[in-house]
Image 1 (cartoon, rainbow, N blue to C red):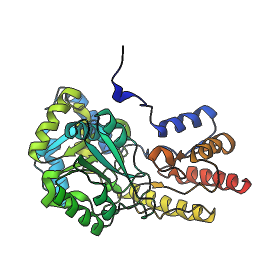
Image 2: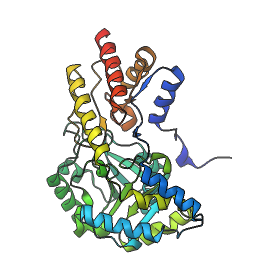
Image 3: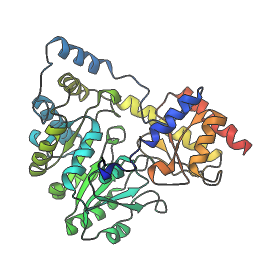
Image 4: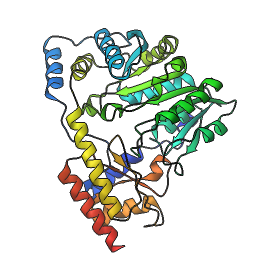
Length: 373
C-alpha cells in the first residue's frame, strides 16, 4: 500500500539527528538544541500543581482556556500594542502546532510558500506535507535579512504565504523596522498572507511584522511559552489571527488536538506574570561572548541581536558543513548543527542558551579543533 506521497523524504529533524549522534558518541558538549538550561520558574510550576490539586483536569474550549486567551490579549496589547480579541487567539501545542495548523489551513496543492533562508526546517516540512511548494528566498548575501526587492521578484500568481521569523533562528538576526515596512507594502499590494513566527520576541523585544496593524487580515502571528519562560517540555504556544482566519484554523485544530492540556494552560496564565528579563540578559551575555570567541577563531559570524544562536561560516574548514559537524562531534566532542539543516550549506548553528561553563567548554574544544586543521 502506498503512503501519502507528501511524506516522501520526511525525516526526523536534523537538529535532533546531530544531537542524538553527539549523545551516542558520548562526552560531548551539546550546543545543538534551542533549549534553555533554566528550569521553568517556580511560580509557573506552582500554578500547575495548584490547578491539578484543584481539579482543573477537564477539557477546555477548543480555542483554549478563556482566562488564558483574555490574558494573552491583554499581554499582547500591553507589550506589542497588538489588538486581538480572545476569540482571535488559539492556544496550541507549542508553536509547532500553530505553524502546522496555519500552513495547512492556508495552502492548497500547487500553492507557493516563500521562506527566507536560512530558516527553521519546520516551515519547509509542513509546506510539503500540505502539498504546497516551498520557495527559498536567499538572505546569505544581505546580512541574513530578506531583501524586499528580491522578495517582490519571488512572488508569482501561485504565491499564497510568506514566512517571517525575527528574531531569527538560526542566525539571531533581527529584521529592521524599515525592512518590515517595505515588505508590508509588497504584502498589501499582492494580497498574500504572512506567517510571523515571533517565538523569540519575548527574549529580545524588537520590531515585528504584526505591528503593521493595517495588514491584520493577512497576518498570522505565532508565539510560544517555550523560549522566554523556559517551558519547552510543557508544549504550549498560541496563534493570533483575524476572526475569520481564527475560526477556520480552530476547526482544524479541534480535529488535530481537541485542546491543549488544561493544567498546562493554567500554568501559562502564571507565566505571563513572570518577568524573564534575567534569563534574557544571560542569553545576551552568552551571545556577545560567543560572538567574540568565534571571531577570534577566524570564523566569520554575523552579529546576533536576538534569540540565542550564532551562525558562523565553516565552509573554509571542510568540504561540507555536515562533514565538519560530524567530525567535530567524533574528534572534538562538541556538537553544532550543520547549516544545511536550515537550507544554508557552509554554515553551522551554535546554540548558546546553556550555562556559561558549558558554553566556555564547548568553545574551548571548538577552538582547539580548528587550531589543528
